[in-house]
View (cartoon, rainbow, N blue to C red):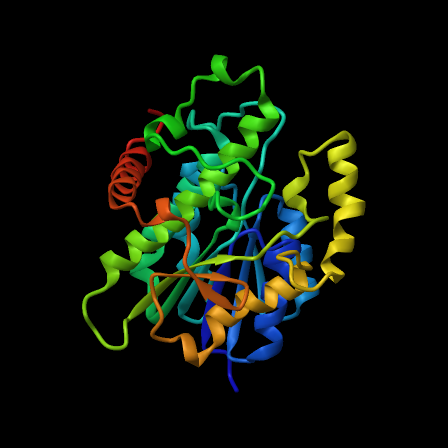
Length: 309
């Protein structure tokens, strides 16, 4: 089978993104994979290790200008038509407040805003039938026993521009809450984009779904952890992947579940849904809040169309 379709995976140099690319390439020879990462050498090395149907392109999601440039240049790589986008890259910062070059809190900027802009910029290039997947997390749902603080969504403007002085005393707790809130933003964006793209066509031309990979200890998401917390993340918690019945997985297993959302014919008409691994489930109560979704969408447009606010 000749290569005829491209899937873009942000954060594809390691862990979940890399394993998802690996699973897609192994399962279907018609797909070309484009992976992104922050370092040019690292992203090119990862693509080489995936084989000749993988391309690595550097992308710094902490800069809205870089995201715009990436989207503009995407069609110049002489790739098969774009048919799927996986918004996977993410950060969790527990060592204090970090602002991007655009003056936006980095967790919100990378985990939500950059992907929001990337998808909107690439939509005209996304062929149908197309699939968009936002990698979220069950940590967005306070009813789930994840050990993470519940999200705190006031307004999207406040998330983008927090009061740094108020947050200085508890950087770890604030940082983890920012992460879970950014994952709520991913689910809110999924549902709102699905509503906007639903033109009543059967099957839908473009589907949009959210995905929870489960806890994946040992991966780069915990790169900012130090001390006992860092040791537990890197060496102790990975042992839980062998325990059945809990939402802790290796990146390979979660990558296979995420690849299914791109590949499975059974999911061709499924849109506006939330998947925890292989299971379609309901997300948190707040994720269905239409007022929050509207605030997030309209504010995100303002933030991405008017840089350096």
